[in-house]
Image (tube, rainbow, N blue to C red; front, side, top):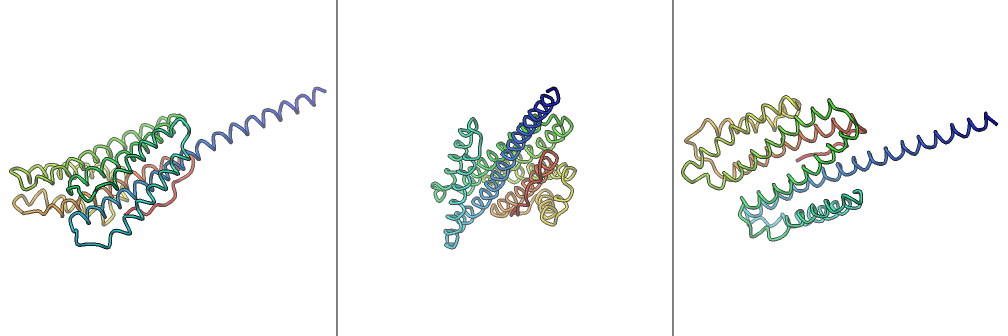
Length: 270
């Protein structure tokens, strides 16, 4: 009888441990799935910003319509998936985010290039903040203090870079005003210093030809004080810099998820 009771207790303990393990794995998989969906949305927002900017600044281009419609359809589809995957308590957060995404496709033809950049920038930052929330909660549950500290440090540098990039975009609109170029050069200098910091976080990404070209462009703008710079050239530079920041953050995310659960699948950022 004693042996039978011991066996039954052991089986109950094993079943309980299995259920706890299954629940933990389910929670981790949900977090990973949400991060994957948010990464896809982040990429689509960048693509939508690029295509709408081209259409606003070069209205003679008619070949963007189908590509834009396809991106907008994907944004709706993936944001619906995001709401479906999210925990019940978090669904309102992602519904608000979906409303923010819906604004991207409404009346963009009436926007100025600067306004279009700012609206897309807000959606992109919103997306990255949601990703940050997921990672912070995941790290808190893991109890990995050293990993949490490292992530907070990296995130703050990336966040600072995002803020500088936003200010640079705003400054571009006034580049032809008195001291407008000087203001742009100041933000370019700040951005260059921030990229130097990011090179310590993700040396491989910052050593890429694309990142090196961005740094060289910043240096040329900073040093050539009397050179006339076209706004369109600067907007393209901010798009390229946004890609660099996205690549660095994506690498940070992948490192974190690999430590906590599984690495993120490869995503082609462009």
